[in-house]
Image 1: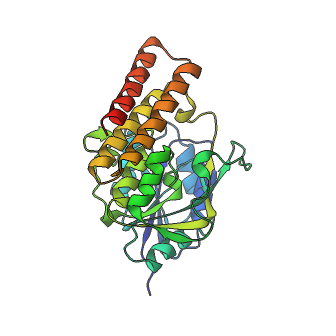
Image 2: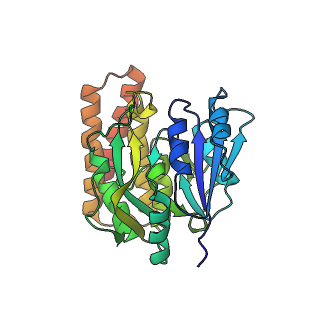
Length: 300
């Protein structure tokens, strides 16, 4: 049987780590693969790395002007020719069998909407780092997980256990994404939870395949926006908004799930208010998020 085309999409900006990400894309053993690089960087290092690789599967697109985070991801998807989509963050790395294992999981289990796996945390030097709560294993063996159940586990624990963009392979035809901004869901653009805004839309319509062995390497380094303290305000606001929207799509249907989800958010915002240095405006915003959590718990 002919393998389906997988579009491996790299929204590129970070010149430091890009060559390693590109090398891991080129090293994939999947036979039907295109690699699309959308360059949103100010310099020429990413173009030079692509030219040096000299791989016919790589298609380079230089954005005529800065598109930013959401714009560059959206441009990558517009450029994709395959129905199977695999994003790769420019600071992450894929194991050589990542695409083939995830594509095989979708093929073996018709009706699955996305495929994910365990991932390994690495540091700025590429060395293995300790697991964090969001990267713990979902299962000890390869399996299929019911979509709404998986979404509920994520929302109740307030952890993206499904994975970053580099972790997941999904079927584009299974989800309706705004071509102008793929992270827009019911009028809200997600940034901190951009990937999860897509995963939940997919899980609403069917199950997920999970590969229990690590197939990608998630790099944690000081340059990431999520490492900046003010991001906790927008991240917690994203969590409340995505839980609200997910409930309208059939997630968190039981009262105890609602209580546990918003209760966890309420607890975390309290911790951040106590421990994170915030401006008066940021503090006021986070206090409003905490009040919103409490209101939803009381109204469940």
